[in-house]
Length: 314
Image (tube, rainbow, N blue to C red; front, side, top):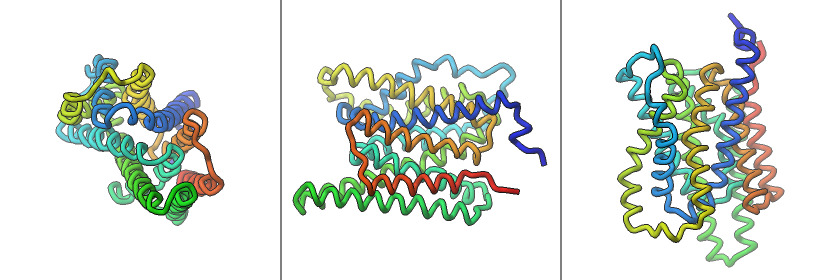
């Protein structure tokens, strides 16, 4: 059997790896920065404007590449699923989730992506899961449990019992929504690998953004009707442009470009950049703190990533 590492030219391999790493790093940054954005703009309006800004930026990518086959019914179905889970539902779960929990918490929960991708492969693609991957899934679950314990202790120390219960419940809902975005991101990774075999990275990016804009338009228009746009600070608009370009243009193109040359299992290694960059952004840019127990949760989750993504020895 040909070894993937030797079959791929060295320059192409490192370009693909760089694209995947940069994609996940940017994703972690915009996941963390989404927290102040949802404080300035309603979730549905924010997501709708994100797709609209990105659509203007890459409208010319909708044209098929020379020699590209017409869109089949199967490809259209994959594009819709990619947009529904990777754009529409991911945006809702992620934006609402980070509005109820911290960027550090969101980063730790998103550390379970490689293990969830493995489960998706087992369920949808009938891939075999080794004992090491099951151990990775256990590490991810333990990391999330330690995170929840740390948040409940902080709440109990800082506020009254009644307020602690309310805050703890809100953060649990936020954590569950962030984990919902993990499920969406995992489906996005599995479906994306199939799409890269029939369409260019640029056209995939533009088409799934167009689907996301169509799905979000009714909700976005409903919220925009009574929204006071003049009350949004100028800094939030600049952050919105960065968020739209990062979430809908740069990261999608980078991920699809990397997936075209790298197997999905190996590409999962680079999702480690997402929780790391989200946590670093939360601490450095948003003034959040990393407690000892949260650090332990983060370390356990990262151990799960290592277990899930190390290549098997033959």
